[in-house]
Image 1 (tube, rainbow, N blue to C red):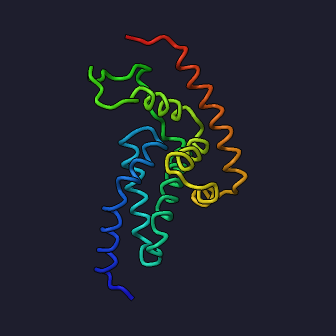
Image 2 (image 1 turned 45 degrees about the vertical axis):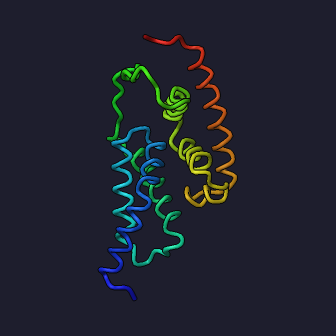
Image 3 (image 1 turned 60 degrees about the vertical axis):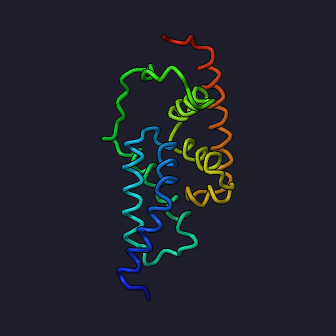
Length: 171
């Protein structure tokens, strides 16, 4: 049996190694970096509470599932409302050092308009590149639910992206 200090060191090592990926996943789910930080912090706190029982090999998948459940739980809370100041994006630098920034922003904006379960399914399935079975395990649902949520989410995303392409660009 590991000592408390060994467990804590193991958890710190895990958190350091996986925090970036968990934060990116939480951002793709929530669409907000501050909310993503909160989600990851809550998920890591939940994982730490039971770390002595967590299998090190399955720890990334286990904590990823906690992140999804924390996000979905956060969305269900009635008092949590996201304030929308406007549709305009903040000013961006004139020279974009990366190609495809506009497309990524459009995809993230469209993702933000999906229902939480569809969004979670698409993020896990396509951004995290999980299999249907792994996505179902992370979300605690059947593979059929993952398939139907993916199909509905992708159809809605296509419509939202087509709609955003037809809108005039605001200066």
